[in-house]
Image (cartoon, rainbow, N blue to C red; front, side, top):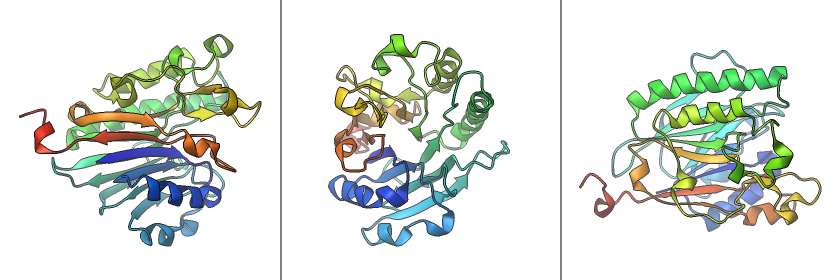
Amino acid sequence: MKLATWNVNSLKVRLPQVLDWLALNPVEALCLQELKLSNENFPLDAFTEIGYQAHWAGQKTYNGVAVISRAACTDVQRNLPAYDDHQQRIIATTLDSAIGDIRVVSAYCPNGQSVGSDKYEYKLAWFKALHVWLNDELKRYPRLAILGDYNVAPKDEDVHDPSKWVGDVLVSEPERAAFNSLLDLGFTDAFREFEQDEKSFTWWDYRRFAFRRNAGLRIDHVLLSKDLTPYCTACVIDKAPRANDQPSDHAPVIATLDLTTSHNPNV
């Protein structure tokens, strides 16, 4: 089973790229962020034509998340149930698998704009609400994967030039603490479970030839619960779509789970 995440920065603009990517990368579930379109404008037919189903939470112009899956999803939930927020940032679905239900969550965490701003305080409050919800969700779904754009580079190794980002949004200590609080629930940053190349990033600014210079940040993550982590055999960043014409400024991240009996960690 392969699970992937990709902030597409407008599904209307990037739909052909997403369809092409799925043709080359037939993952079981693709979590999308920043759809930037209303619910009624979601291109469901384009996905069903290539054998996928979809659940989404749309929002005109901003935000929006989706889970594109091969198999049917159940128990679909949109947004954090105990957090009053009109922003569309969470969609959770349940997939059947050889080891039982796997809860798959697509998350678009707030950017925060700038340290100390109202949007920054909203980001920290939102992460607290996410922590509370995930703590409860894990009791119902011990096999849980939350994929998305977290808008946090967890460590300096996830930043192209840490000295230029000290105390800035995306890397500030409160943001990193909020991210680490999710790991404290028992989640694992799947990418860091494996040996990776230095300077591995998932986002590059459109300006100043950032992608060409590999001046990026790793802010898109796959977090796996402790009951799911032992099945993970790989986690990679696919930089190829970032070189497309009119690309998203983010690259997909793909985690591979081996759910065969031979890999069962409990055997």
